[in-house]
Length: 119
Image (cartoon, rainbow, N blue to C red; front, side, top):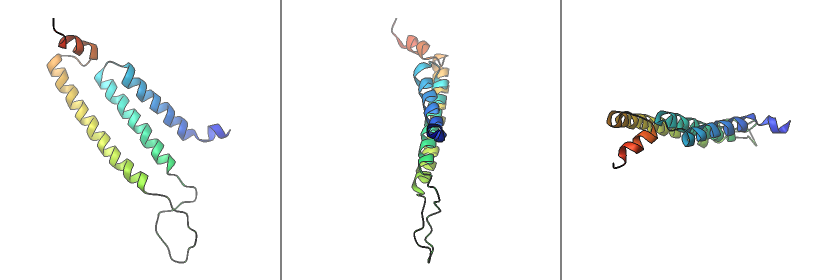
């Protein structure tokens, strides 16, 4: 039962593999971007769940309270920054896909590759 007790790690692993599969196996550029976003979300989940401390409180020192257990706020700050970077990267990727669609008339990798090959 201990194996199923850490369901957040199972969710992380499944989401990571779904995102990885979408990036590797799909030829559609939009699907690749969505897979990359799922992959990033899985990594965010892993970092956030690793920070959980049983009985931990906010790191505010209170006088007269000995041996208090604190949770580290650094992972949340790093993940908040990573979410902002991930959203902006996805937006930039979508803008590039729009330009590729305007130029090549397709967002499928093999069609773009064939259009770039010399005749």
